[in-house]
Length: 251
Picture 1 (cartoon, rainbow, N blue to C red):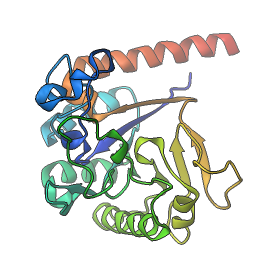
Picture 2 (cartoon, one colour):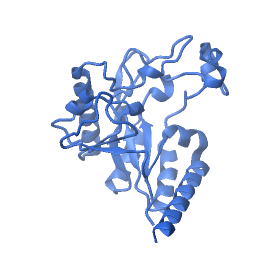
Picture 3 (cartoon, rainbow, N blue to C red):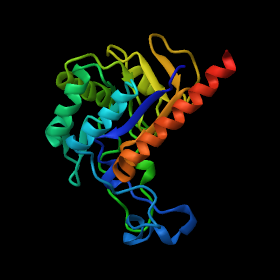
Picture 4 (cartoon, rainbow, N blue to C red):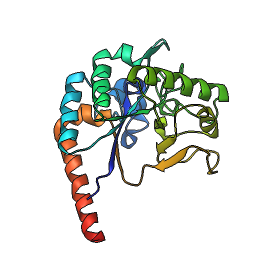
């Protein structure tokens, strides 16, 4: 029996605090004022960053099932003044817990961008959604932005985790041929997401595209924060069941 790959996105991203938009069933009213931060009108955030203690519980569950998840980390937190705070500085206990897990080969660290957002346009809007600005590698941004964000995020993550970071998980599944060009000269050899680059499906040299629709259980730290241990155990149980059924069919 083969289990799917498990991947958790948005660790360290200020998107969890600042990406705010209303539930589509209540629009346009749900995008007004504080409504987009209150259930049932809210659709995404805000929610809290996971603590080191919470991670210890989730990592133990993964160990029990012999799962080595991919942990996609955004290298800096963008605050309300557009200052970029490196992940290990903003969340030192969480970062150290993940570093120890990576050292034990219990998790794989992936690059989830430098900012997850367009800096300066990331704050909530009074009467509309800001979701479109929580996509970091937009094709409309200059090549210089793509290159600077890839290089800076790699430096932060590789320095702290003391290992090559070989996978990029583009925030919001949006990336560009400019992003691909920005990878040249870095250790990134894989891009995992649900969509190919925006402009073209041309073959890439030295970089593999992995479609995460196939054999990947992907979710955000949001689900772990809001639903906790029972939710994760249920997701793993379902994935194991699917894997067992697939093995029977192949036998």
